[in-house]
Amino acid sequence: MLDNEENKNRRFFLTDASTGLVEVVKNASSADISPFVVMESDVEGSGTLARPVRTYPVYFFVRARSMAKGDDAAEAKEEAYYHARNFLAWLKVKHDKEVATNIDGDFARVNVDGTYFDFNSVGPFENGWYALLIQPDREEPLNLCIDPSLYTEPV
Image (cartoon, rainbow, N blue to C red; front, top):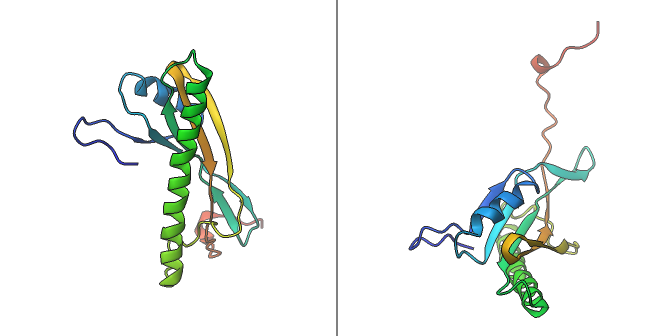
């Protein structure tokens, strides 16, 4: 999702944590920027020492036309799901291109084949905003080289 250069409205935001979502939505309420995307910069994940996997929470926000109508809320959630699926399709194309050309890049390490993505709707937020949260995982290479100057060893 690209920023709108004509009216200077941003459509992609980075936030520290899910608590930062409320602040982003408050600021978005003053501008007509539906839809927009928020990605958390928190470091989260799981895995083994040899193969850590990092999780990237990404939210696709859409504003409902009316808070009073349940149909409008459902449509906003479905539109957010539509944008999330487009993002996943784009991610898969990037992944397949890097794998096909034997590039060990950021997209090649995203788990897109045979992996389940967690996703769920979030909201309502202030002024009728709804979001769809997806959480793709990416393998993080672990450099096992240790700098001895960073550690003290017991004597």
